[in-house]
Image (cartoon, rainbow over all chains, first blue to last red; front, side):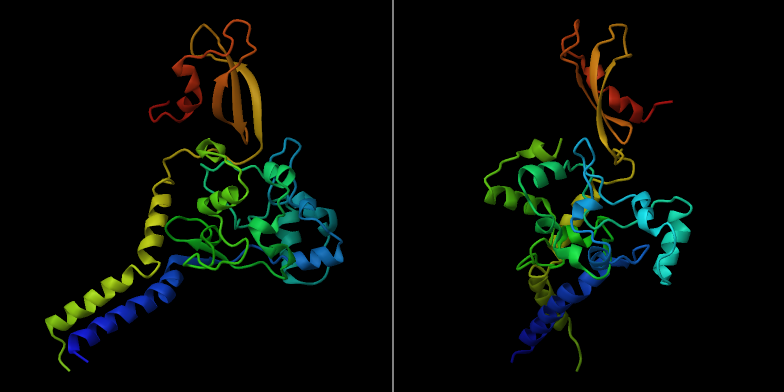
Length: 194
Length: 108
C-alpha cells in the first residue's frame, strides 16, 4: 500500500473512532439526581397506576410537572424503611418543607410553548410516546447535561446519529414536527413559539 | 519510521474527510446555536402557572384596557382588552411593549 494512503487511512479511522466514542463522553457531563427514586416500586407497592396521579395537570390545564414535596409527604411523612435515600428524603426535603431539586430530563428551552393538556387530552397521546418507558424503571436514569447548550441529553436523544432511535428517545423540534406531519396536524411556527 | 510533512498532510486529509461522517460538526453546530439563544443577559420568563389578568395601562393618562398574561406571577405578555368600553382592544406600541420595560437595561 502506498505510504500516503496508509497515513490517510490512519487519520480517517482515528477521527471516526474519536468522533463516535470520545466526543459524546467529552460533550456530556453525568450528574447524579438528588435522590433515588423507583417508579416501579411506587406503581407496585403504593398502587399508583397512572402517571397523572403524581405528574398532574393544574386546574387551568397547565402541567405541574414534578410532584411537590407535599405530595410525597402524604406517605413519607415519617421514614418508611431504612434506606439512605429515604432518610435523605425525609430529613432534607420533607421535614424542612423544601422542594427536591430534581434534574428534569425533558426540560425544554424557554422559547417553547408546549401544552401537555392539548397533547394528552385532545390528541390522546400516551406519556411514553414522548418520554419513553421511564415509568416502569426501577431506578432514576442517569442525567447527562450538555456542556455547551446546558440541556439534558434526552433532548437530542441517546443515539448520537439520531438514527434507529427507540420510541420516545429525543425531544428536538424535528421530533415534534415529524409527529405533527404524521398525524396531519399543522401547528405552524406560532403554535409553539409564541 | 520517520514521519514526514507529507505523512502529516495525508493524515490530516484523512481526518478531515472522516470528520463530516462523525457527529462532531453537526452536534457542535446545533449546540452552539442553542447556546447563543440562552445567554444569561437574555431575560427568561419564570416557570409556573400561566394566568390571564385584566388591567389598565399606567404609561399615559389614557389608561387603556389591558389583557396581560403572567407566568409564575411575572408579566410575560400584553394584549388589548377587547371588552374595554373606550379603547375596545386598541393599544399603542408603548403599551404593547409594557411588559418589556421591566427588563430595560437602563431601568432604575
